[in-house]
Image (cartoon, rainbow, N blue to C red; front, side):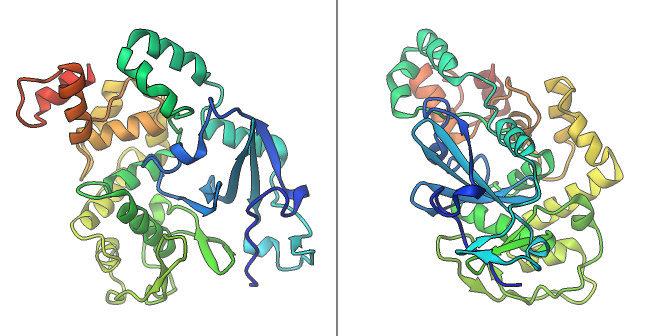
Length: 333
């Protein structure tokens, strides 16, 4: 199919854009989408962010007190459509109420952030001093499957490399959604895709790395019929390959996708315990998943950066020379 054109501002095809009222004090896209909560967003042009959410490709942009968005249709929806002035004749087949709901849920816009900033500032002088430099930073509410497998990939890793790994994972195992300006976009893989037989297409095809100007690199193709772990190793996942494939298998054979979602209603301690039984999931990954996808606002993911801040700024866990389980628990409490 002919690639669609990226719409990087409401002036590009205005009829295909909508907005939600949302001042910068409530949300700053640039701070939230680049913060390492999610790894599927790309600053496609200055101030515009393009990524995959809810099985669709979106471009988001803030202008004053408005959060603008446009949603792209899938390739098969455009095969018979004629374009006018470079714009699709039809928008993606989602109604406005549904797209508004998806965005409000993802950014948790029903939670008033300004009031929380004031309360936190009143309780914490350090927060009060730095808050003005970081307005609109809020916690995303992500899909639990995507969040879990993304954070399994974060061990001993950094944001740029994690983003590239997740991109390769989606292109090798996920459903292709559309192509914008020659850049392909894919849905996050389902559990069945991560545990089932290889797809008919060969992974010898070029895989686009996540970068402002995508680079296409050929990757080694594992033997025919190779399992998910072998395919992940061929994609450069290293030792994380066995954790991704092992956790996918454990969930498929145990609580299932629905059970993973149901952890949203379980107590925090129970959700954390269940997650920690999965291969490659320790306390920090479990807390990231609890906080960012399972509605556990009390979860406090602790890495070495948080540990250093807790020691130096708050005098917590001073008795530990390393991030021990006891220090982790003390910081979280």
